[in-house]
Length: 304
Image 1 (cartoon, rainbow, N blue to C red):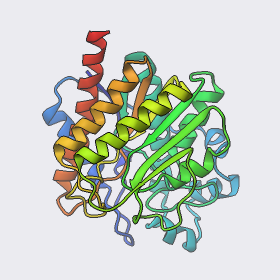
Image 2 (cartoon, rainbow, N blue to C red):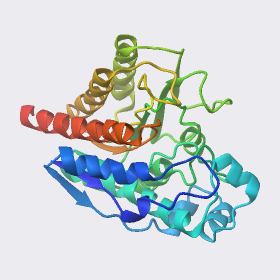
Image 3 (cartoon, rainbow, N blue to C red):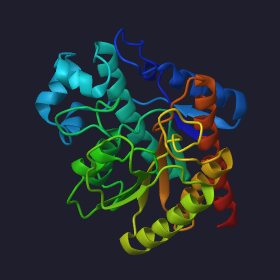
Image 4 (cartoon, rainbow, N blue to C red):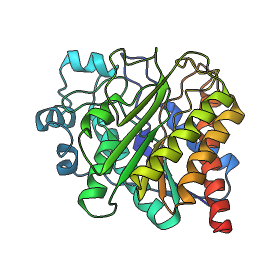
């Protein structure tokens, strides 16, 4: 059973200015309905403002929620922040948190959006407004739902905002495996960064991930894993520079779930990046990623 968090407001109207297309989130759920008969959809509520402000600067939060974000910040984000966008980013933050709570019950759960890993304390960037990963991690720890959280970011872009917002915490470990020449130009410092050259293929990528996960899981000993499951390392991605195949992405996702669930660690995934001119193909890639992880989680439960 795939437990997936979704809200109709994840699909915001396309802004008049900006290149980001929100229909991917509708297409992802269509693909789930068509290809994953064993799924249960859960609807999030708006993330409370106090939890957003625990991570983001209150002045910036006010700008977003009142749809008065300065033009220079909107340019960094990549689109204007309307009232609909303000509502959306509260729901996607609530969605990642709800996926984590569901993962504690079921072993694995997914948010059908989220993964806004470029958002910083006082600004958004790279199509990201609020950092749902950092917000969810902070709330889970503050409310006692987790003791130590590992954030595994396998988007092709470095999780710079997540790294900065959670830097210095002993109860959070951030791992980012990304393309060294991709956005952002100025990288942050995660707990561990692995920067890859262009055109890395399946075998080399999986060997690097295998070693990193074994090392970190053994040393850090988390009880929750938040997974930025971007599909933009795929060879056909418009903004990626790596060369993973469909099989490589599947093996990657199975590896994350297998290593976590064999240690009894709950896993919640956020959608992350995936870009292409064929929006249906990208949406199906995301849907297959979540279905793969749900399948692997079920396999591990049977073995255990």
